[in-house]
Amino acid sequence: MDNERIKQGLYSLSIATNASEVVEAWVMMGESTEDKSSIISLDNYHKSVYPTELNKLINNIDSHFIPYFETDKLYFIDDELLIETVKNGEKDTTFGLDYSIMLDTNYASYIHNFVSRDYSTLNNEIFTTIDLLIRNSFNYDHIFYMIENYKNSFVNIEGEDEKTKREKKAKLYLNLVSLELFKSINREEYIKTGKLQYGITENEAQLQADQIFNGIFNSAYAQEGMDYYLRIQRYMVLFIIGVMQIKFESKTTVHKKVQKLFEFATNIVGIYFDREFVIAHKYFTTQNDVKMLNKINKGMSPKKVLQFIENIAWDFSVPRIMERQLLHGGNGRYFIPFFLSNDQNLRELLRLFKVKGIMYSKSNDFFVPFTKIITQEYFDAHNYNVETYFTEEALTRRAATYERNKDSLPQVIEREFKKLTEIMGL
Image (cartoon, rainbow, N blue to C red; front, side, top):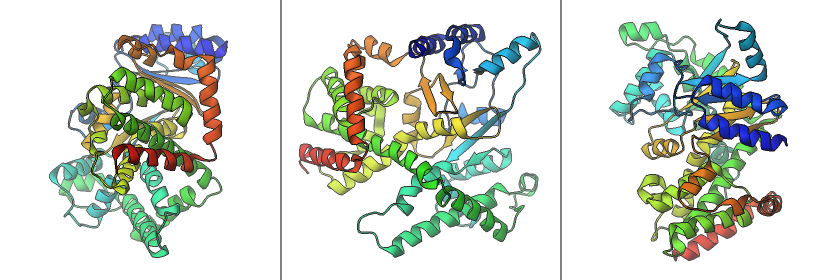
């Protein structure tokens, strides 16, 4: 009953255009909203919640700054907040909001080079972005950078010696030190004179980097937390392998390709990925819509193909890592994530699935992002009958596959990648 109420509520939230419709949808869900919150972007809403300067940057089509939500007109709701709003009547209800801009590995390296005064890798566009970061005193963090480099620096890679692993860890640590120095730059002095004046010494930056490094990588919960993110990326690897198998297998209709992908999700992956299925359909329909997947072609070495898939899987993981931060990040009542990247293909990918809103619970990691068009309606609009993949029988099959794969995911990936190389004739 609760699941059905939430399903109906999510549909109502996805088509809501104003605050009244959001409240109506929320009340309709009854007790199923307990311990849950929602953030929804609304067409007919007047309040922008983004910092003014950041909003200007985001609205530039070439901007390196990528928001999680499709617009800045966001409405927030949970049971307690709704009660507070009713009690306040016509008075504004105020609450804490926090936001942060996640840096990818490239930007972490750019900032390190900037602090080290090695400008050889920094073009005008990157200089401009770094200048804006300092001038506007934005909040930003390096959690994605840490997650992305966890596998490279801490997980054993076949054939890699100890010296290489130490060098990777050392580079990661030095970038962290530079990021801490960068965060301490005296904004007023920089605007006035253009000079870099740090608020902490290099030793203090090292101490702060030690705390971050140990807190994320060496704490009691470090491996569990990092393994969660790594698992997301591994499932994305498996999903992309499936997309590539279907692409190179035969020249068939888009309908057949989508059908095969649903079967792959049910029988091989064990998870249905809402966002990624929409992206895959757009890719099967017009490959130039998802340019990063066009990097994978026949004639490459298997090693190169796998490397591309690994990197693309991190890009596919970005929204899900942002969602995790939305649940657990920040100091305010609500947290809004942004992403910073100079990778145009990644920016295009993130804009292919525009998030209207999300319902989530911080207590049990429940979260469901949604668009204006629910995925089933999206496929209905393209004349697909996908209901068969959401029956009790299909859900049971997927769940059984997931349970079967949980402890053998590396072997499943290896097996499916071997099939892909055979299909590609590599």
